[in-house]
Image (tube, one colour):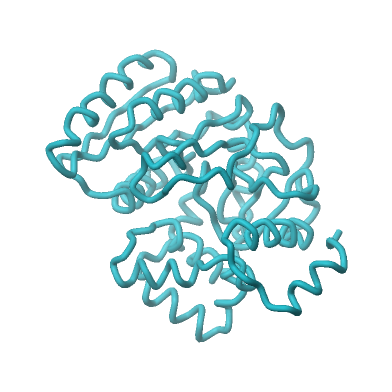
Length: 302
C-alpha cells in the first residue's frame, strides 16, 4: 500500500473529547505513518477562549505520535462548515485524498486501515464518492460491507476527483432534488428529513456542510462505502457540541475488526438501505405512511 492519506482533524473547544479521539487514533496501526493536520477554529466569544487554548495543550501531548503534525489555527471563529470545506479542499488539492474526522469521533484500531484500503481500492472508480467509518446500530444484519447512495460525515475519506462535485449552494441543490423528483429518496422515503435540513441551511437556521455534501453526491448518483459494523463512535451527543443535543439513539459498540470482504458490484445495497431506513424511522420519531408500515412486515431484502 502507498503512504497513508493525510488525516484532517477539526477541533474547536472540547479538549477532553479531542484527547479521546487522539488516543483512539494513536491505537491505529498506520498512525505513525500518517500526517495529521488539525484545523482549530477560534473562539466565538470570550468565554470560549480558555477551552480553545486548552485544545492546543492537548495537541502538544501527541507530538511524535504521527509522522507529522501540523496545526492550523483560525484567527477568528469561522464555524464548522467553513472550517471543513476549506480544510478538506486544501488537503485534497495538495495530496489528492484525505481522511476526515471531527473532535467527537472516536475510532476503532482498524479505522485507518479501512479508510486507506478503500481509498486505494476505489481511487479510479468515479462513481464512488467516499469511504465511511460509522454505521447505524440497526436491529437486523448488514452485509460485510456495502454501498449507499450519497455521502456521509462521521469519519470518512474522499478524493479530489469526488470532492470537486461538492456544491455549497443549498438552494440550487434543493431545487435540483425537487425538479428531478429525487427529494423523497434523498429523505429515505420520509424516514429522515434531509430536505428539511437543507431548507434550514438555506434559511440560515443551520450551517450544515454535511447535508450539502450528501446532496451533492446524491445528485451525481455517487456511492459511499460502509463497513457492516461501525468503526467510529460519536461521543458528541452529550450537549457539548453546537450542532448536536443529547441522545443515545446513535450509540454503537466499535467493531474489533474491519470488513473481510468488499461489495461485488458498484450498486447500492437494498438490504442495507432497508435496515437503515427502519432504524431512521424509529430514531427520528416520524410517523410513516400505512403502506410503508405494511411493506416493512413483508421481510428484509437480501
